[in-house]
Image (cartoon, rainbow, N blue to C red):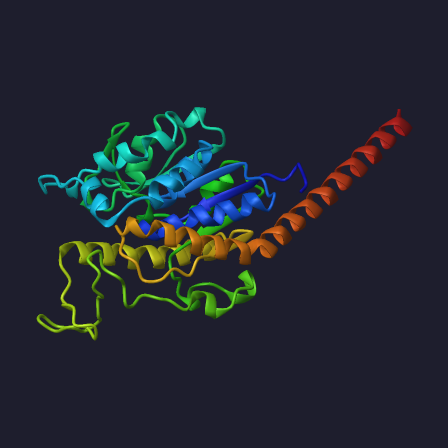
Length: 330
């Protein structure tokens, strides 16, 4: 690898499916590809912080050891004025694996959140890690917002579900974006991204709910899905499903505007937003996606290295010509 090329990760939103990003990172690192900086949104911010702190292995072990019962215990219900869950227990679970202050992490790191009052994208690059990732993952209506630096912050997926631009702001020459969101094929140019429609095939339907049912478009009250479950979703399912649909559309638009040098699309099965007891399955799916993406990632790095070498030669040549011209004129 060209030591002059700075490689960054943009880790996307996705709830429990976001644990697949752990496996993607493992495959990239095991292939000898250095990662210099990482930007994350929502679940991607949590995984990214663990990686930036050099604690990804321990974080993976913690998440893959979760059972359904333990997952239910780590999500603390609160008086539903600003959200159903407080998130304090979940933060205690991951706190040993994400470092203390962003400035002290082993890799440059940023978490993306949304200002609930102004709608602005807020990039958190300094301060305490836990409030930053807690804010980035605060799905409105589900998790209570986080008040930080005079702002009221919620889920960054509302503004940038796959933060490519933020990774570039950390100095990345090559951005490897990782998304577990199924993106609509028409939202990105195949010629521009050289990706087939099959990689975008899971679009907006049949979203898995947090209680194991399936949201069926057009199903009325009392109707059932084919597996016999109630087709009429509850509050949590509606909020999570709506947030996911919005994130899919926003991600597709942002990736079209600023495409990464390499895009890893993880084709995850239907999984609930809070099904973290399936983290082991997600990590393995991520590993498979990471292995498939290695040729594209290496090609992107090689292209950037080649461009950098050409620019360096051009700069040196221009400098030499200007120096020679000044010498003759003197």
